[in-house]
Length: 433
Image (cartoon, rainbow, N blue to C red):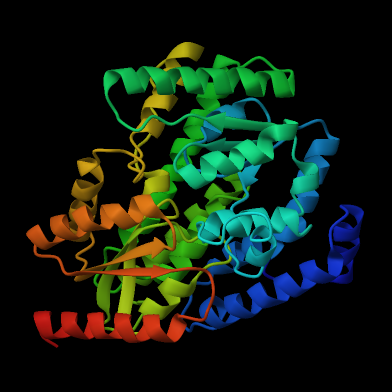
């Protein structure tokens, strides 16, 4: 996804028991959006071809890779949140990737049983499974959810009734007692993956997994550093594609290709080759993630006179900010270091959450954002309510912002374009053309 399906893909989906005709229609729809909103953009870095391929192969080549690894004895773990400690999954030899849905096409299948006024991310994900169009569902040895919102918590109750599901309880505060709870959750998760794989967690393998994930985070941070340039050498839409690939690709292969892309971006930056027209207003997008299949808001901003220079989201800085301490030599010390790093993620589920406001204001300064677009998915109550405090913090720092609420459909694209164009025009008058 997204790619026009080949006969070989059709055979694969039939082998997995999917609804081949419906699956093909869904991919056709997503492919059209990807071609229009991403691949048709001029001046893209050559290195983006790899990441486009990751997106294209997510329902084909990547599925075959998962199947081959399972045939060789590895267990497949599907995840739904950036709080799942990837280092532990890597060290215990699993193959893992994010299963979140970003398409509106599958939502009606979820709405047959689940409430209509639920987050589109949850409904899209459920719809893929319930419509028989998620190629990973038949391959799952374990799915891992978390308690970042009520919709997810209750959904995990439903999905976990037949087993094969693990829920990480994320605390709602970051006090010492909450840290202790989270550390025990990570330890329990480790034991669950050990039981699944039949392997004992080895300190040396865990240390290697920590180094690999830290290398991946450093590469992502370097890509974002290039976005601070006067003429960013990569668009916000392409940076989003890279982040989406980060959640589904093999971590080592992904990192190698990102490091290569970073070298190209360095050359583009040195020559002043920007990915967007000069004078585009620098925009920070804050709030909900834009998972694979969803490029709508970035496309609208960057075709309305804006340049998305940073994303304060789980498909942005929240995924890679903060490294795991590599100094512990023992297994328990490394597990504690991993738990500590993941607890620094500033999701809107935390209350109070002044940390997130401070981080957003700091990032707006570092990336020299002229304004902030708060992106809120319908029925995402934590980000929607927290948008009040975020707007106040940005206003106090002298940073204009706008809040948009939307879903995965294209029905409101025209309305959003009008609002975002007006916001960017106001920034032009504020700062002078």
